[in-house]
Length: 223
Image (cartoon, rainbow, N blue to C red; front, side):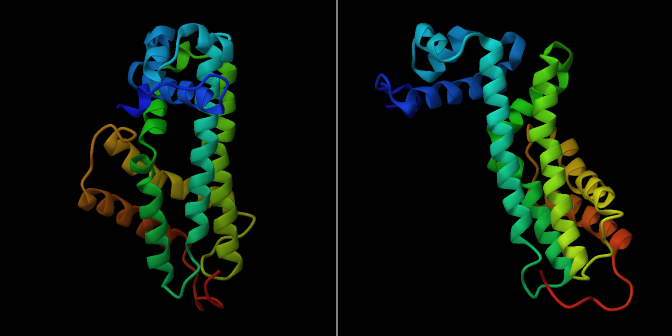
């Protein structure tokens, strides 16, 4: 049996999660404007009445789906940042490993990035407060996490990054790594080969390293 359409027991937390999963799928494929409550309920394997018992309207459902997804992916991406620069690998290799892991997040979280793809063309038709909140807990939170990690790396003397330029460094790395891969793949819609991803990421990481490499000593060691 298709797990999306198996019977869901009344009154269980699984019911809400099924609705959110169904909504992620439908919003990601149809967008906000074209998505219908009937289609979402069918995808979730619940009745429209059950859906309305959990969410008052399509806007409130979209808000919950987008913001919960953004918060989850932002936390997962922060964990990616935290994994790196903690071994004896060179600064260049550590930066490249971080960048490759980050660039592959669209493959790890395909449904989230399908939602993001819909935001771009539908932005003017989406609730403005939802977009602002998504920006705060999604992209902005991710950049803040990256900034914190780069600042830690800078304090260890591995990169020429400090409190004065850490925000700028995070923006630069986001543009050089995320920007290239996301643009080429249209936020994960178009598949890229491992060679394409590695080429884009390597170029971006090396440019970043040229911009923020320390002169002189490499510092006391990995974070």
